[in-house]
Image (cartoon, rainbow, N blue to C red; front, side):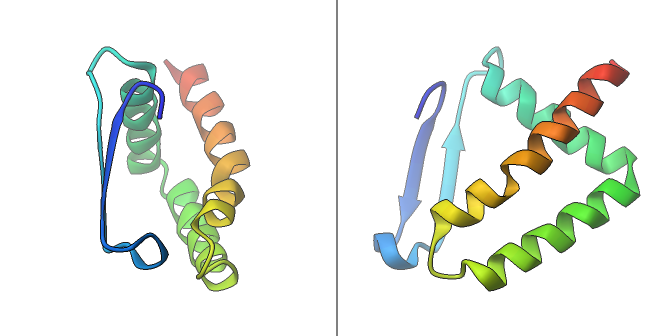
Length: 86
């Protein structure tokens, strides 16, 4: 995975832990903090994200790739809003 080291515990079909490591100067790291900070300061967006994650977890419980893809548009929208505020 670009800009990060990724570690997982457990069999591919039933992973129990996910860990990503990256350099603080990487785009990956900066975007994660920007996204986190935006949700911390915008309760409505955080609640929307919570609802989306629950819906996707129910729909794609056995398919992590589709679960992740389902969040993509939301994450991109929030990053754009967060960048506009900085």
